[in-house]
Length: 299
Image (cartoon, rainbow, N blue to C red; front, side, top):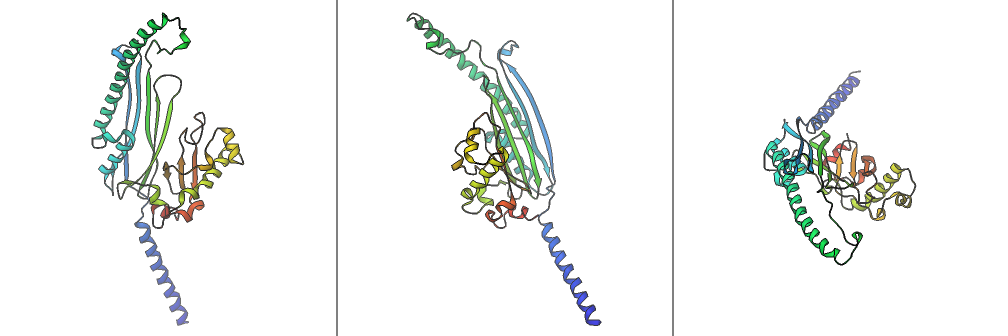
């Protein structure tokens, strides 16, 4: 009986040691980043010559950024957000100063474009007078419109994932410089709070990952679009899928990796922006050992 009691006690101690070791491992990979975010919103409209009857530029901006971080360098994180969302020329400024300068630059660029338009319009009118003497019809040469275009831009970022020492965030920008076509761009970033640097594909994947991901991306596109072949995807407006590769435009969560392919990369501009979610279970063999994603894949 004494021997049985000793063995039982031994296993209790051993289990306690293993549990304490496991708790220690988890404590070094804490889920809570301790980040508090702030938001600055701008809605700016500027008319040429300050005349409400003239064309205008319209800027809508929503900037989400880390205001404070408990365990990491908040100034480094702010600089990364400014650089990726507002632009590389603004990352050394305070947040409010960067926003103000971005708005000012947007208005000044619009005014400069309007001045260039005026010069070209005057030159074109002079050429048109000369061409009229040659009896050319209106459709034989192009004309600038009588009124300069109005511009608009919508720029925003959003937090997709904020745990385990990383922040995944997405930046969306929609531009229109006259006409019916607006250009939309989606950019994804993953910030490693410990290093203060953006995570790259080489940080998370082993060599040869790009070609290995091709069939996974193709199959995901087929599943989302409810077709059974790459050829059918091409009929829908996709192109170049036989050579598709990961494009460095990804987000990371504890569930997997999401790639975004902007319009015009592998699809016609009329289609929605393709987003490809890849669960860790599909790519576990491609993950670099001891990387953040390899740890996330085991949660």
